[in-house]
Amino acid sequence: MKRSTAIKTALEIAERVKKCSGVIGTPECEFTAFRIKRMWLFGSTEKGYENPNDVDILIDGGECGLIQFANWKNKKSMAGFVKDRKRKSDRSFVKFRLGKTDKGYLRSCGVYATVSSRITALRMVKGNSRMVRFHEYEVDGDLAHPRIMLYPRNDFKT
Image (cartoon, rainbow, N blue to C red; front, side, top):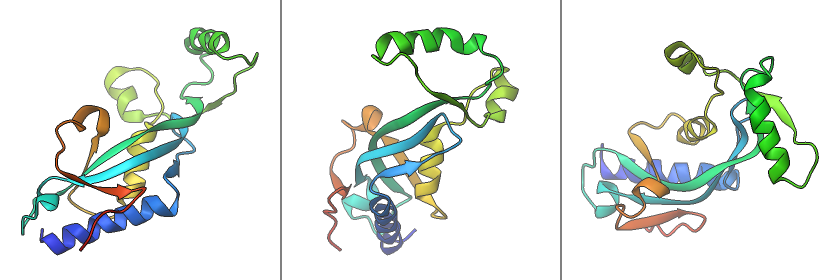
């Protein structure tokens, strides 16, 4: 990949996130939305290599919105969770909905689970771009230096 292509890809991703104000809707997943708070470019593209292997993007964000369960019919699996949520929140009723079942996880583990909001949102942000790697701020935040902020403030100068 050439440096110009990597820069163009990073700016396209930053524009996609800016267009939706950092909130990506994931209606049939574990949570109804994913919020990107901050986003940085780092790695070989940021350091100025002419032929970087990929575009490394560091994301600080998390799931938000309603919680959705994969197996609505099996209320026993939700019972303890619902009681804990009612105790923690001051409302007497917490709203839950049905989400899409992650069939790969069901096949491998035999457990009903909903599709991850984080993975779905990052797929939507990535689009058709190739060689893009997303890293989480909690995991790689201290290792990703130097870095350039792409969202909410775009510090990238071409």
